[in-house]
Image 1: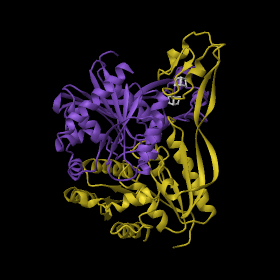
Image 2: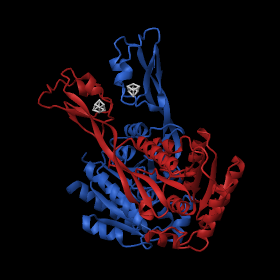
Image 3: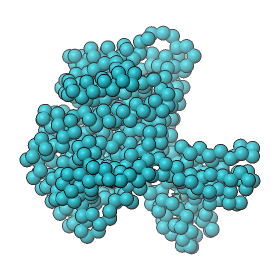
Image 4: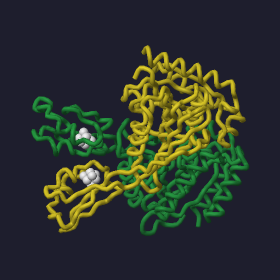
Length: 286
Length: 290
Ligand code: SF4
Ligand code: SF4
């Protein structure tokens, strides 16, 4: 869209400073940024932005329920379910909610319409507002629930499509929850650290962004410890290094206490603004 | 070390998120524990191989799910697939595999029957030899799903290797988060060691992962990495463990030598990082030796 921009902040693994960057970027931009914490398994951004929660939307997944008085135990549902979540044993149908993807194939196929669907709660979306006029949205997966992606999907739906600037804090890794978080964004910032671990994980994340065709840039955190592998890799791959943040004791302490980077080092505000302008230029003009 | 009795015991090391030193700790455990099999279940962003440098002995393709493949010449663009798909993943026969949930509903619904589901090669798993013994690990293709299923495969194979070699332990490097792959890495293990750090986010993630262990009824122990970077938060973790009756098995100080060891592909035991190596040794004794 013309006047909106969505930037995702991601990293191959946690603990590289992804949340540190995402929250400080949000605080450095003009008021009214929309912030989505998509790391629904281990959301942390609220610790730094400290939002006032205003509402909570339960999020569910539709799962099938079988009316035994109608069911003829024909086994069609069992046959079509790719996830072995619905099983017919002799004349009984068993549904394993934790395996179900809520795809609706069983409901669709049932020849006698014995299946209805109920919404099973798997998490919540929380909305609130934080400093600097930030509209804060967080997804939270219930403990014991396996599927994070439906919550991220819902979180994206709950977000305002007209917000000028949207930032998404993505979960670590390269599988579905990350894809869901990166998908539909205009730009991705990958946060890494200059160690072989950081490099290994960065390569994976770069792969994700390239598969999804999302332009990207790299921020190196704790840039002064470790080795030169990241620089060499970025040079080879033609990836812009957007910012380097050295290991500073005060920043680490602030992080431990939930204090955003730019509160510890206010001079970073300008640097984040510049970084944003640069990204915006690239997004708008390619 | 005791002889393997019936079946090997299993320990999962997790942190709720990455970057807390989980792989450093797991690699050290790999060196310290005799007669074990390592299982890297952080299949989404595997790191353990960077330190253990496995030599792959066996590589097996992993088929995580099936992809809809449409015969576009026969497709009449009737739109039924688009209508039934709940993931907005198919438009008149053209599939967006990133959005696709691989549920096959479109294939069942297509009136022309021109959609076939085909096995998708979504990764590989390996049995390897390392300088510290056998290791089972995996690589999930980029943008693939079903990492939970791949974790289960890795664990199953690790169990085979352990049984064959009468090994007494399987040490599992767990994935971040609390979702599907984590659940798969915890199912049926004997104990879980949670490594955390004294930051508010570390504490938050630790609490979530501990409730997951409780949910599955798995005895959990906690250790704190870089405990000296924030003593007040460390005390908070100590108090939390005390209150919940969770054993705190040790505290590891911050030392730059840990990063150096990592950069050189060595365990902190091999490079004997001052204070860190003894601390981990002590944790290892409390976790493995009863
Ligand atoms: S909704 Fe889909 S995943 Fe769930 S039981 Fe039915 S067919 Fe299986
Ligand atoms: S397999 Fe399921 S999710 Fe994928 S395109 Fe077909 S209906 Fe949609």
